[in-house]
Length: 175
Image (cartoon, rainbow, N blue to C red; front, side):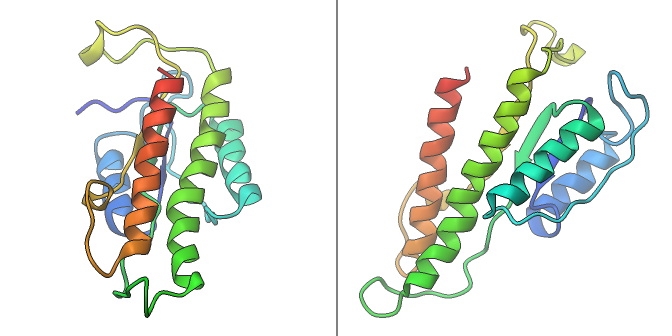
C-alpha cells in the first residue's frame, strides 16, 4: 500500500477511526509528502457538531500542511440502546445521533471541499497513473444501517440514511 500526501482522519480517537489512522501511519502516511518531506502525525480535538470547531480544525490542518489530499470521515456514535419511536425515543435521542452523523458529516465535508477546491491538482500515485490529476479524495464511512432498517434504532438509521444521501450528492457535484 502506497500512501502519500496529507491525510485527515476524523473519529481517530477510538474504534474504526483509530485503527485506520494507525494503519495509515504504519504504511507511511506520516512520513511521505510530495512537498513537505517527513511529517509527524498530529491529533486535534474537535466537536463535529460545532461549525466553528470544524472550520478551525480544517483550516488549521490546511494552514499547517498546505493542503488536504485525503479526508476520511469516521466520526460517529455507536448505538447505545434501543428505543422505539412511539414510546421510548426522546428528542434528545434523535438529536444526538443526527447532530454527530448528519450535521457533523455536512460540516466536515463542506469545510474540506472548500480547501480542496482551492488547492492545486496533483498527479495520482504511480499505482493509479492512468487517472487525471486530482485535488483530493474524500471517504465517508457509514454502516449497513444506511442500506436498510432495524427495529429500535430509528434515530441511528435515519442519521445514516442522511449521510448516504449527502455522500451521493457530494459525489455528483464534485465529480
